Amino acid sequence: SDDLPRQRAPRVIAIANQKGGVGKTTTAINLGTALAAVKQKVLIIDLDPQGNASTGLGVPPARRTTTSFDVLVGSVPLSEALVPTLVPGLSILPSDVLLSGAELELATDQGRSYRLKRAVDQYFQALQHESDGFDYILIDCPPSLNVLTVNAMTAADSILVPLQCEFFALEGLTQLIRTVERVRGHLNAKLEIQGIVLTMYDSRNNLSAEVAADVRGHFGDTVYKTVIPRNVRVSEAPSVGKPVLLYDLACTGSQAYLGLAREIVRQERSRSRLKQGEVA
Ligand code: ADP
Ligand code: MG
Image 1 (cartoon, helix red, strand yellow):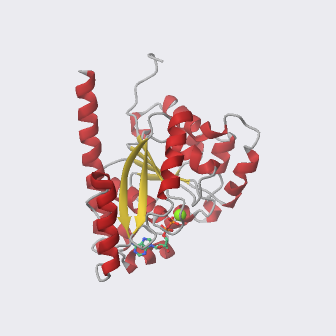
Image 2 (tube, protein in one colour):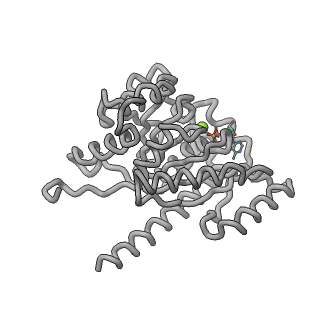
Image 3 (cartoon, helix red, strand yellow):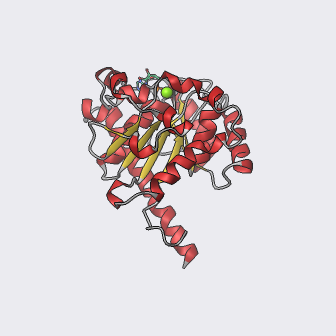
């Protein structure tokens, strides 16, 4: 209502693709870090029971006393479950394997798809200081189109889709788009596609270039100009619990994620200018 203090609304982006191993978690961790590096306040919500985003951001299981499961079932408010990371300006809501029980736990709840949205809305309604707000919330989705992914899409403003530059990249995209349309129709009419990001691009491999050209042919400007290269530093970094930008800032992977962050910040600036124009 009008008498609540106005807080900067965050841009909530669900990183989704029901295929496993396409770079969702890697993108959540490193895009989140890169956005923080360009002075944005960022929250990553780990919504995968595998907890790879939590591990990759240096939050070991022992520090995951409260998790996204607790927040989804409503036993803990989001504000009490956030954990700071090594990266200034970047926090995480961690997950653990218990999250795999969420489907069963919420099975009889008619409002189960709105659990995450409600928790995020409550956080911003209760916010006392603007400095506790976020510019971006990135949700790392599990590799399936289950109740967790539906919660992410219901809470989100948009979907960011990582596509691996390999032969079957486009396979499954029809199903993903159908799910987005179903969520739009029933749960979240404003859900947009933020963009498609090509991942694990191998410049020595013709197939990567062919897949990239094919995806751009299909989706045009929806595909980010920045391409994430296959880079061994990117895959090494999680084993030391760090985003690649803290592990090796100069490597091609770090520089690509910085490029993607800048592209998204520019995209959001022009979107809010457009919106202001509509209102004026
Ligand atoms: P998802 O979350 O979609 O299942 P991940 O982000 O976990 O995918 O990535 C799958 C695997 O590929 C991981 O081992 C990760 O380290 C590796 N990987 C992801 N992106 C890159 C990259 N740009 N270069 C090299 N390895 C990558
Ligand atoms: Mg993952």
